[in-house]
Image 1 (cartoon, helix red, strand yellow):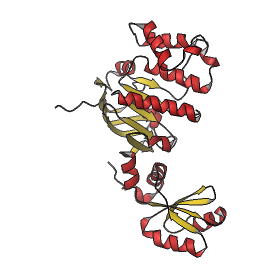
Image 2 (tube, rainbow, N blue to C red; image 1 turned 90 degrees about the vertical axis):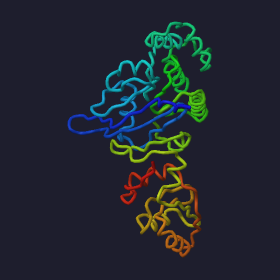
Image 3 (tube, rainbow, N blue to C red; image 1 turned 45 degrees about the horizontal axis):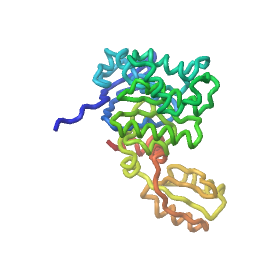
Image 4 (cartoon, helix red, strand yellow; image 1 turned 120 degrees about the horizontal axis):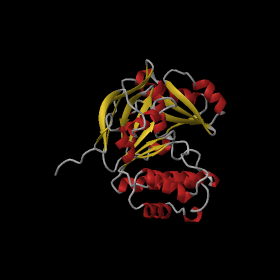
Length: 310
């Protein structure tokens, strides 16, 4: 059986403004059914990368293909084939829900426009709002309409920039249900998110910092291989705990979690830190590492720069 061709395969992609590269050596492969999460701090290059992959921004270096199209030479064709949803709402507020969808169907040149609009309205449960102006929708329903518009042409690759930003818990779950539905149907999704807990739902994550991908791999693998341990320390005033442990030898980071302090520590310092905590009357305990912990350590800890996770 022949290997399934990747939906996305780019190598050495770069983008600069003036003399400064905001994206350098972006290399990614994505296959049908996969969900790839872009994670990292603001300004790391995630949105720029997404716009390049959507064919909306021209790269200054590199090569690759998206849905079998040349990313460097066929950007207009790429933009017509992928489904892209920006973080900011890209809807016409004075048009109704149905009119917004009809406009997007026209842009994509769909043959059966009315059928596509009706299908999108049914799929996204927008029928009660069919004749309502988009500008009067709540944030959650506006985001749902925007996603419906991005998917109206049934793209094989969907690119989503912060699709759950500002949504309540129910609306976030709806977005993720639809992302998983796309993947289960054989489509592929790239999602840019600041929510590291959400990113753990992706099949693969790519951690960005300073315009580069520092690490990529399955979330569980990335967490497991991360060169640190996590502790929760309670039993004392959290402010006292913070004063004692912040910047202490072997402590990489500290976070307050309610009445306890979360510590990210170097494995070699584990016994000394446990002893120090018990000596001050605190109650330390081991706790599972999280993807957000791993991301922080890789970006901020100099000793983790050689951390290879591929």
